[in-house]
Image (cartoon, rainbow, N blue to C red; front, top):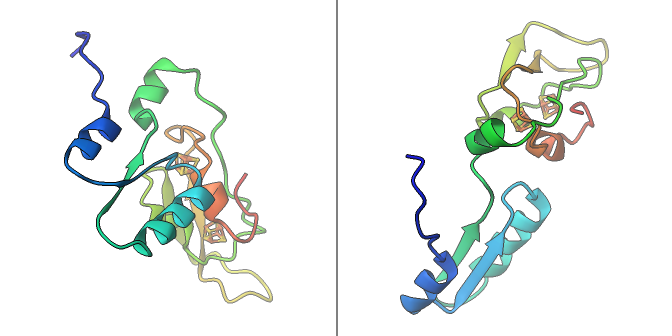
Length: 130
Ligand code: SF4
Ligand code: SF4
């Protein structure tokens, strides 16, 4: 609402509830996020993982946005891994096939609403997003 407010320290808050396993991660770092989840699931008792990063909408409004990413249709294998992120700019174009590939379509990124966070780039195993 534009009014200054006290920042809530989630780590202290969670610790006050008695949780001993607390980890703070950057949710845009796929590798670190996956290993934190794996590590915490292997522990006994409750764990809390705090995903800490400014809201994407806040970033768009306040920080100079990075360049939007795009899908190289030649490299895209149509595996749909990037679609599983449910990121609004990513959509599916069916019927775009490729010789020597089983793909049934390709992914597409709407550059007008992509904030360039790079998450989809980390997910694509074919190097089709840059
Ligand atoms: S993850 Fe990569 S290869 Fe798979 S659909 Fe998305 S852009 Fe294409
Ligand atoms: S770079 Fe981020 S915002 Fe842009 S399409 Fe990929 S996941 Fe979505």
